[in-house]
Image (cartoon, rainbow over all chains, first blue to last red; front, side, top):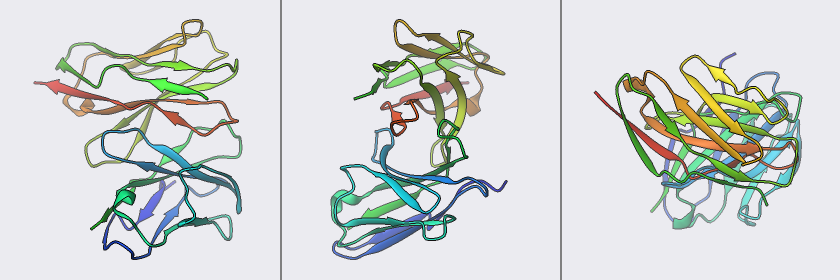
Length: 114
Length: 113
């Protein structure tokens, strides 16, 4: 069990650019979650996958955001045409087979949009 | 919608002393799960303790214990024998299996040597 990993850990981009983040869940975890955390706030849910199926999306996830988990293993979160308001920590979490299993978090990707 | 409220933005405790962090939540569901997560500065969020709502017994994990009051919808975290490494943001979170994990805004805990 190597834990949830995320890459990159930090990303600085200019407004209008596209960015993509990757999350590798704990092996054998079939549920994967994305959250966004802004300064001084708790994480807010963005979307989650069960295996390769994206089962729920938050209204926070605008059309500029897209997430994939093509083979039910790692996941990517892409933000197109970034805006300064997208600056935040993007957290990934994974959990096991049962919906009530505890979610374990990765270290996050800190995005700064200039 | 479920909400989680942490009314203490900041708390401080002397090393070796005990501190209690407060959390209240709002839900109409009877079966759910409550968590305390710890987020040290610039480090990842880790699980401190988990409580199933159907269990009457309060969860404990070494120096960490909770006071779960289901009727009052209260879920406080007690940290005994506080250590410098306990300094972090602490987040209370709610999960029912039908909703995403819902977090409070967090309490920043400082430990004074």
